Image (cartoon, rainbow, N blue to C red; front, side, top):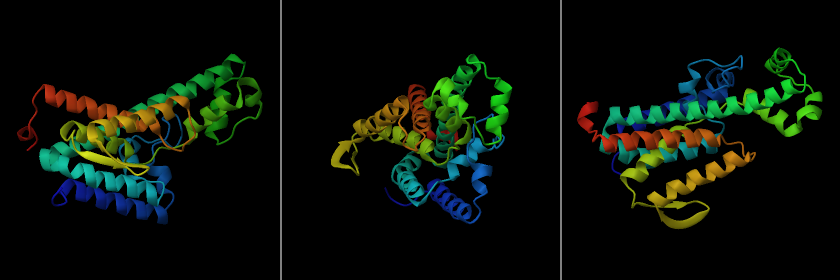
Length: 243
């Protein structure tokens, strides 16, 4: 991989500083994590800042390792400006798909309550206050109520969406490179390794498995990364355009 490239180095430093600061000042999670757009805690800048927030040591450690391992060769190939554009675009793509899926899940459950005669404004007022009515469980089922509350109240944090975009770009650029999963220590070529990871997120995302991971944010970052790589390849984009 050679030396640590400038953009990757600065992203690593900023992420570590923000992580340490957030452990000292937990209120940062409310300010900078990505909340559901109708949640009172939502702010427009969270679309960017959530990429620098992490939920724990292993969360940031895995993300920063991936940023170093897969981002370094891409920045060496592209240069700083193109790499940063790609990184943040993938992260924004992750935020948009994650928020879009949450919007669908939230309003699907909300309309189910409205269909049972519950006033929509009353529901919004109750959940905006951090509460819910146990009677909702009897009306639409506990699973739908949990989906409603989770979509509204649970913020997204982490660079994972941007990292998934980086992984897709790596698989495009270095398709024959052999990688290994921690739980499956067998060399797998990047062109198979990355789709395998994404397939796992698709399965967990569509089955609604409670993993504590924003699977659709991963998928959103991967889709954004794929679109950019496909477009750049089709139009023969080169590094001179980013100098």
